[in-house]
Length: 501
Image (cartoon, rainbow, N blue to C red; front, side, top):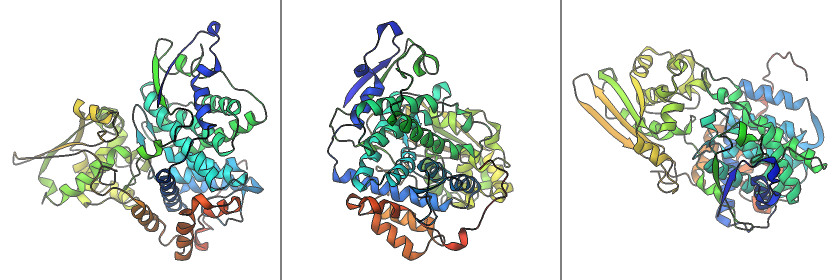
């Protein structure tokens, strides 16, 4: 790996392309790095994972809206929309829009946390859509996805967007553009321009994940993927982009992030070095913000140890800076304690999540979020006894550069009314690679079957699982079959539309 120092340069210095971060990203996107077998297996796992959560969210309102918008843009040689017949095709950028929204809606796919946050699986819908429209094969798709993961993971390691209240999709635009460059075997110059263009148009504020969180949380990464496709298309036509987008005098770093005096260190593989960042990412067993995964597991185990939850006086969760300030009481969002808050807000409230998991001894992607569940009197009472606080020990673990030592858990201190205390801690979620029950292919398939049961046929389930596991050998005409079609009874649900399309 290389350590790339990124900082602002005055225009008069005329910074050379080869010294710019966007160019270095483009170099690895256009290289001929070998692909390791175990890395391919993880790509397959993540395609299965994305399909699981996309089909589970098929008839949720944001997903229906995105799908209806996509269907207004049919294209004979286009891309598939998750859940529909593979015979139905739309423009690839609109397929990316619909499919990206479906993947993100339940907050249930993979994650990578470092200096910033990310869901690298958000790369897949856009790259797959273009692969289908451009008749790419399985190996092309694998290369594109690996590059997307590599770029996003390493940008997240090196550049923190959150401290400036910029949404993490600003790292997704460049990663999708780079992934598309690998997929389509574009030259370094075209990818360089595409990465810059994609970053320029995908910078937005973090208000989408603050206060009363709306359905835009699901649409945001899909929007970034769509914009990245359009950016690559423009640059393939010979158009340029704002440059240098990271280091320029009026650039992203200079006026959106930490300013002209800041130096960022972004790790990147060397040219032709195998891409393996996907192995550092981790999926979710529970449909909730990743920083709650381990604490859900801890709450489930504590459920068996506390006979009467009404005997609890207060619960303190000691955890990392990010957990405390993003999904904890440190966020100072009253909505995180509101029984009438949106689902999107509740899945960003560790106080709510811990209370429900502690009461139920379980977590469910639908049942744990219903209005009735959130407004249950005993739940509200317990929920309002919970507070978080930062413990620098957990912040240090959160930011550890060694993937084997990096932790996303916390310590729970439960004070009972009789004066006794129960105290337990957990480092990582059970499904984490270092957890009690790490997710392997078997667990990904089990998650797929559980989330799609009753929505797709058993025949369709077997067909998809068999096909995707043969990804390396798939010919160009087979990528359309990576779509999963839902049962006909689910096809007719629509909302009354007052729309442009």
